[in-house]
Length: 148
Image (tube, rainbow, N blue to C red; front, side):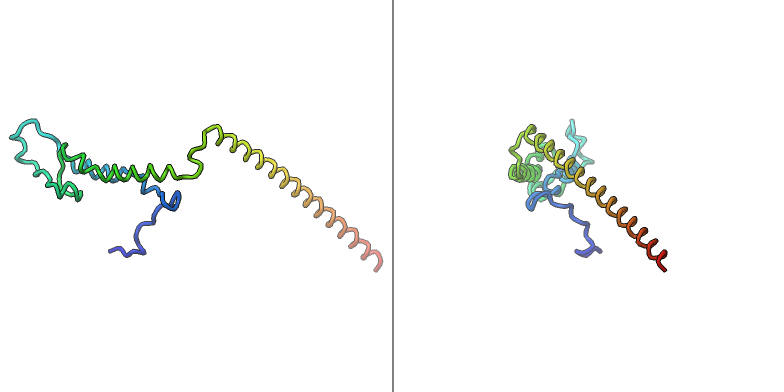
């Protein structure tokens, strides 16, 4: 027994409409192919195989399939891919070229390098300030001892 709180966690969304589940067609395709019955070359060899699925079983996703049932049964995959394609087209900056993206990456890497330089200089200033403060405390502490 699983409760709603114990269900498997959902993967994070790429956007509010697009998630990895909306792109992943392997489980649906695997289920479809597992229902596919091998075609027989003779009509006498079908005695031991299960009967072909009715149209309602094909549409509902249950029952064995034959090759001629695949187009109808694969509609779910087709619709899933069409929706995913439309959602991918709505992603921001999807129309940018690779050269534009590479230029932005270089600019961002330069910005990161400058920020690291600034952080390193700030660290050096902080270390020097601490050293000066400690030196000042030592000398003022020695003066106090000499006067008592």
